[in-house]
Length: 275
Ligand SMILES: C[S@@+](CC[C@H](N)C(=O)[O-])C[C@H]1O[C@@H](n2cnc3c(N)ncnc32)[C@H](O)[C@@H]1O
Image 1: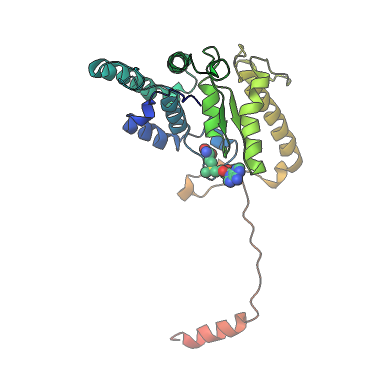
Image 2: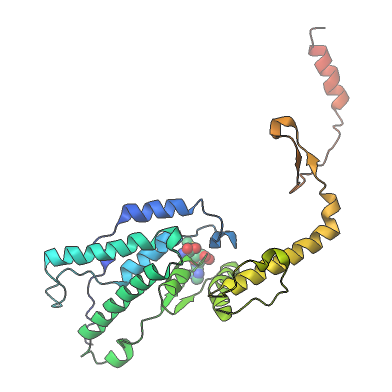
């Protein structure tokens, strides 16, 4: 069988690790808009790390590789590598999660590497099946868990698949990766209300779906409030806790059991007391 010519990937040579680590650590404190708020997953990988690692596995390292006759000289390779590092640095920032300029730069670099690999393998007997320069290979995470890897593969422009033994993980992945694209660029269908009227009017990407979830969420919350809201009256806070009125989010209830030995203990305590 003719071997496949596979240039070294960036991840095998170098990575801007400090930038990735800082972004991954920062992500832990981000609540709004993060998939970890959809459902907690015990071993979720930070999105920044998943995105960086996928990108660095998909782009070729520009260094010269004699065996393949691939790459550029040391000085040029350093410059090219720096361009790829800069993409990684921009990619891992939370603010750039949906920044199309940054994502398009990353996608373009992935396509360029793929086309180079296809060119290197153009004479392979299965080239038409394995090395189509017009079709990126798909990604499959067979242990998808909280879905960080399938989500980021999709964001980088790959056809993305995920599977898992645990049905909860499968549900999280479906809700995050499979269902939202079906509603891409669609306007919300839930009845509008005044508060939300001023929000987004251009329903790009998953914005319409997100708006529907907000609107139906508000309706549901209203119904629940009407039904059981009286169990959660406002309480007056002690001065030590800032004073004023506050909404109760949850009541903690404890079952009280009177000790059969209470009188014995009291007797015992009074017997111990100096008086
Ligand atoms: C470490 S977690 C994956 C975390 C994931 N990369 C993320 O970012 O959330 C490993 C996953 O592998 C799944 N798993 C373990 N053994 C498996 C098997 N034999 N087949 C499929 N999935 C399996 C577990 O259910 C778990 O969700």
